[in-house]
Image (cartoon, rainbow, N blue to C red; front, side):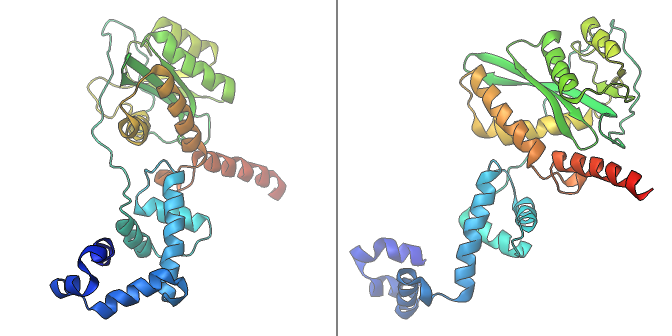
Length: 300
């Protein structure tokens, strides 16, 4: 209402507008005086202005995808003392909203004739340590020059993305490249690691299964007709589609998808708060695990 008067006062005048609106001229003039002189504002108004700046900063720094709960948690992590209801009120005033996930689209094309390892996970996507369980899956993105495909390898312990690849083709080589990145970065030798995927032809291909065997990794493939056979990987891909693909499209090129995926993976691993692991980033969860291991021998 006050913003409406600000916008139209030069044309109609303050008093005529106030006669039509349920607001006293004195109330508006006090608003105008406070706007011109911040020192006249109440302590709550000054605090709201400061908090609004912090909320907008946190929201922008996290891909503009956080809702009230995660903005509030991030501010708490940064030592900013604010009530959750205050964050909700100010975000509502600023028109800031978190993204909402849509329905997932399955990309699995199975080969009934291909031999498959047994399901060693049985929909239990938890792990006691890093490099105990990896899950893999891929999705597709429509661009002006055709479809591109994005594959991920995720460590189930902290849901950290340990390998990813963008490709113009959905052949087995492209998911194998994501696996190679994970192997190079993590070097999970002799860790009793299980690799789980759905029954997509890329993951049960000879090349892929042979590479898992060479690395000493136990393969696992989800059961037929089970919509939750690879739920953890689908969850991460759902976040990727919601937070990047659906918000930033339409996509012009392969290079644009690849660059934004790189940016998102770095943010996801190192700064995104994940509720299932205690509202901390995956990298922080893994660091805490290894720090605890170092303390245990000292205590003994």
